[in-house]
Length: 353
Image 1: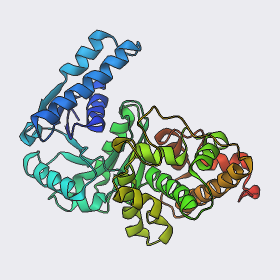
Image 2: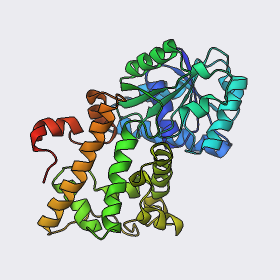
Image 3: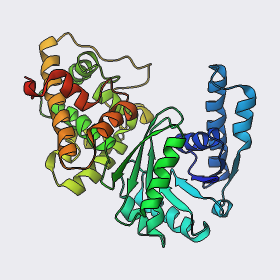
């Protein structure tokens, strides 16, 4: 592969542009408007400037990366790309429209990839005439930094296409997990189930926001409490992912907790709206709690369910212990993977009490 296209130039899309350009690929970045293109250029410039200020790039290297990128609003600019990665918002109708247009204007041998974090890659492939050449390529944010990548195949995927994309991801310095199409894939399925469970503890009157977030930061040593993380992801985005998972599994606890949907319904979407489980008029400070017994109870409840979900995923044959561990560490920034936790604690000690 020599030339890469990226559709959608928000923070994620611009990050994907940077990843490929840093590896020496010629990249075409396309968005729906001149304003969106300008935003993508700005996002790339800011990221490269930070890298230069931290000594990770020289000015010359930064300029070289920028010179490899062409920008525009016309899909025909990507006609001779070998791979096009779509990084538009998580709206199926929008992604379907994009893939239909790409199918008609990008050369027939090209691979079309979606960066979706939870939507059906199969459904996206079905709107094209090249279902065997459509694949999921899910980067984590920020794409230039995060090492884990999910490569998602469908029942239509050509094995050579899958291998090419896995090899490409490795060549980018990423650690890919090759998995089949399933809502949420590895990371978001495990993560959103865990976050949803935390909200249910509040809904059921079992615990409070401060106890829950303190427990998972202080005892599990997770980088953020689950409710802080929901605010960062966006409560509306979390509800959409959970609905996708629930539609697939039919398991009641996979449906979004009432405390999530209630906040979304009144416009409390997290950091992006200024209020979610926390308010953001002032700089956010992590919650604390002196209720040690309550924190231990929450930790046990959440970690047991999280580990059980990881074991269920492994036992189904969907993903290996290695890929699950790497996904949760590299994709979520957790201090250890679930099977590393099990090995440390001892499986004979589970569930914890």
